[in-house]
Image (tube, rainbow, N blue to C red):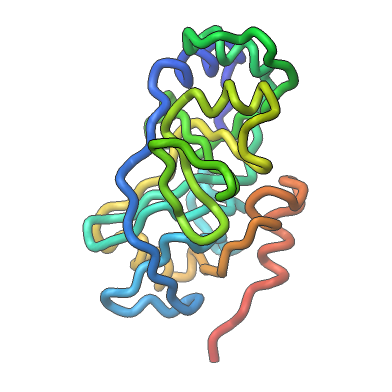
Length: 209
């Protein structure tokens, strides 16, 4: 996992918070990606056979998957805890009345200077996009101000960077046994202790007959 110095992470997050265009959600069976089936909204879990050390024991929330490729956020690699007020100051937003800290996560090796806010769906802003029925993503950095004032989403995860695949690349890796897929739920995305998440997801794996 890449480690970042706190100030560097704050400045980069503040400069480039955004979200990519999202694919429509179309769920598929674990280990059974047929042509035209996509896994946006599911969890992608590295198998013990994963050969890339960057993704060893990772759990990824799939945000986008279509014929042009795929994009997801690693959700089980925390980097550090940062005061919300420092993030707001770096964004040039008013930090008055904000308290508490948030955990920054390593979201993946692609564009680690870009930040993403994944959160529960009861919270919405103008730029909020639903990933599935229980998880959403907001591109407006003002979501951090709402979090600091205890007016933000009930559950949230803030990540730097993402994992990306070209056309057909992810399907090939799944077919080779590097990953398995499983349905997402808020407990796995937000609640299970991050150090146990890969083990918990692996225990729930369903092997197709």
